[in-house]
Image 1 (cartoon, rainbow, N blue to C red):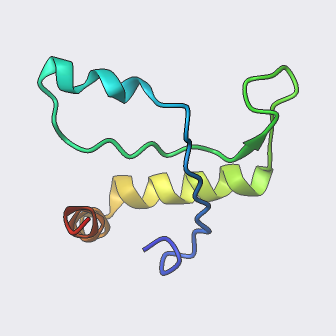
Image 2 (cartoon, rainbow, N blue to C red):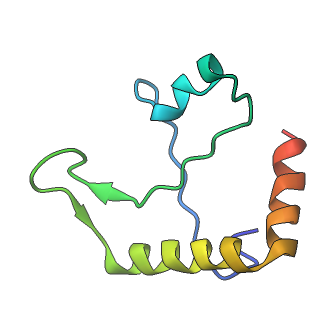
Image 3 (tube, one colour):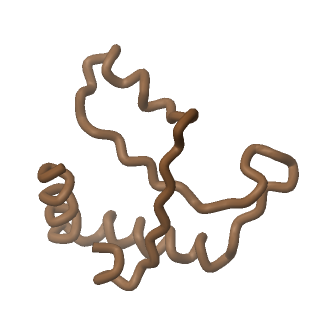
Length: 82
């Protein structure tokens, strides 16, 4: 969907990390958690850096998901098919 919306998508699989969402099931929240992150270099260091283009792309994606119900429904349909 991101390509159709003109938003570049970068993916990475973390093999040893996680998010705070790992605690959700213990609180009865069983919905999938899809972290939306800004790609950076120097992750978790004083020199961590992000590209302004990546920040603008994230802004575009968040605005799309916050203002377009059809986009959200379409994305949820894709998630359900995993």
